[in-house]
Amino acid sequence: MSEEYNKDGLTPGALVSGDDLYKILAAQRLGGGTTPVAAGSDAQQADDELDALRADYEEATGKRPHHKMKAETLQAKIDEALSAADD
Image: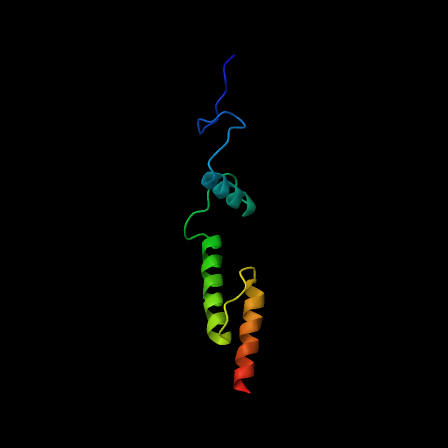
């Protein structure tokens, strides 16, 4: 009985390393196929923007943001802290 291999040289249902699996799942979540997310992509830009908002939040409030805070929440809290500082 011969085994069939896919284009990556893996048998169907073969396990892949955690890093490769993470990249594949991230690409699928972003609407792609099994292509890993490229540097400079929209996801990378969103991460960079979120990092900038986290830094702004920490500067405005003096506290580190919760790791699950979304960009919209961070921006609202920054605006709130800045308007409180103006008063």
